[in-house]
Image 1 (tube, one colour):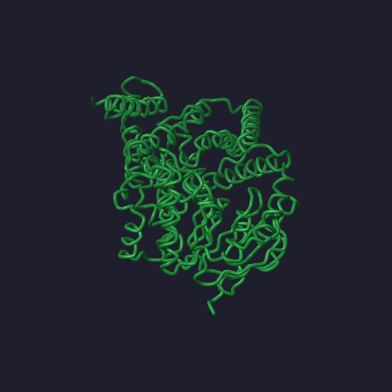
Image 2 (cartoon, chains in turn purple, cyan):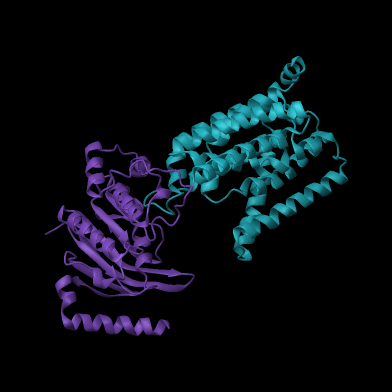
Length: 243
Length: 275
């Protein structure tokens, strides 16, 4: 049996008294590729921000490698690509791709493995962009730089919050192929998306969230007609109620 | 020429203070621009002006109190933190935008400072030098203060630079707390503004934070180059400003701003020429 990396128990979160997440329970095991899907405003990003310690839940427990969030110190084991990564970057940003990639080592006081750095740079095709300023990169190139940065300390888990937003169809396809190859190399991936049609076959677990956790199971289970029907009926009912 | 050298001798403390501040600004001002906070020093000068007037009033009643080094700083700190807390309260209680709350409180601080000036007979040449800046009023004590602020800036920069630069690309990083980095960034900025008010004046001190950092950010190919170019143009502007102000007999602060604008103009012309 694989090691449990993340365990979320009875997690609830509210913004100004209005409940956004209600009693969420799930686990991620080593080697999982979990896709969290759900409608806009369904609480996917809030869930990620809770498990990364940016938001404090009103109820429940979050355990990384069995340690509660307040006792967890090994943040370098997690690679994180935020939602709308690159939104803050503009033409004045002086950081080069090379400087950007070296930042995690400074945050967590770790040394950079030069040969692994080279490997990441080649994997993401960043070799010709190393001395480019971030402000001069296209959105797709920026996205690759963010993924590169999240991989630089050899994390055990990669967390991506709607990473393909803003990418064209071909870039999205290339991007998901890259995720597949990273997963095949043994990386555990937690991916948030609402582009269900883009979820590749390599996703082995799926969680559907819209305030509550409607479904949590394997890709195969998700693909069975009955489960899809159940999920989509709940999904659409709630989507409709938003309007 | 001899006259110029004699004048430079008289202005040595101001000039050296300018050099130290010019170097220390290079390590903070580009981050201020990148955080879209370039009006912050301008707002801060309004609050610090009130602190300066209070210090001036206290020193009138207790003439010996400020002979002890660094005793102005607690007063400055108190006034700044009080105004910052008011901004925070206003923002929370009335649900205002931060810049709106800042504008209200800093205008109030300036208003109170003006009332205090007129009611306590502080309206003299010293006040004018605080408003417009002067190289002559800078003392050896101010110069040493600039030096230790430059050293402090370098120390804090060395420790917190990765977090300052990260905030230009990310809102939050797992396991990384930006509170101390932000607090020290603001503390260093406050000290820099406070010290440079005597040199540049309340009205023009914020120019030191904006002109050259824009130039550095526009021309630098990486962070190191940006900081180096910002520092270099700061030094050039302060030195050139001193000479220009002596030769044409114009205020030092405006001469520095003119020099800084001149570098920007050159950059602008070069950009047009290249395209």
